[in-house]
Length: 226
Image (cartoon, rainbow, N blue to C red; front, side, top):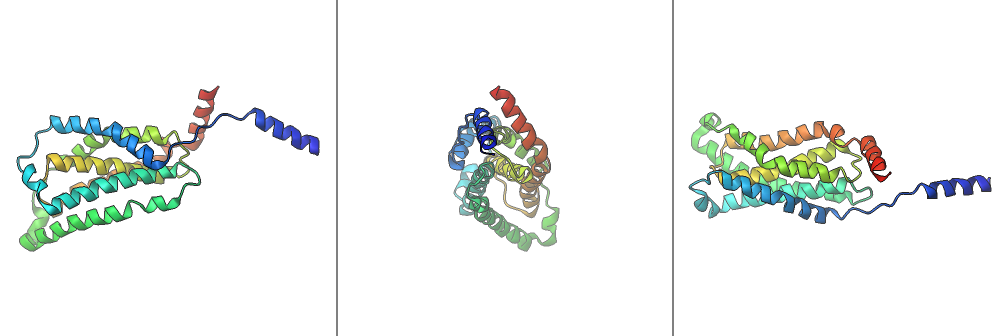
């Protein structure tokens, strides 16, 4: 029995592969942001800035909305990177809740004012549906970078990881879009912008088991090590 145990230990020790621990989620979020920012800035420069942007920047509500939105995106990124490190504090998964609540509250205030001013007609005010596509455009590279970085960890909850990663990329994309298209907050803007971010997050979550298949990632890692 002792010999069998020693043999088992010896065989396990011989098959060990060197493992380098991943940096903590905060550092990886900073790296992700550094990779994403140049692309976002380039796309913003290619788009025509809104003529009223300087005035909107002085609007306290707009600043609070943007601050909450970017904070929600960054918090979602930290939470996504935390999900791929087994044993890491699950409290980080709750990190996006506060900035998301603040973001929804800042938008909700404008929507209530819009309803009070226009009544039910506020539901019929025109809005450019291309905003959804622009969120996709701004979030494309951040989303791709996020997927590449997350696949280097252990995504044991692939759907949740993908959903919160999608929230991070779409949130950053929406933040950038609002800088080049800072329209007044309305009910329809809430539908297209917030709804678009949530839909993209849900779609990412639905495809999470394809992007982060644990068995395939483990097999690929072993093949690369050989």
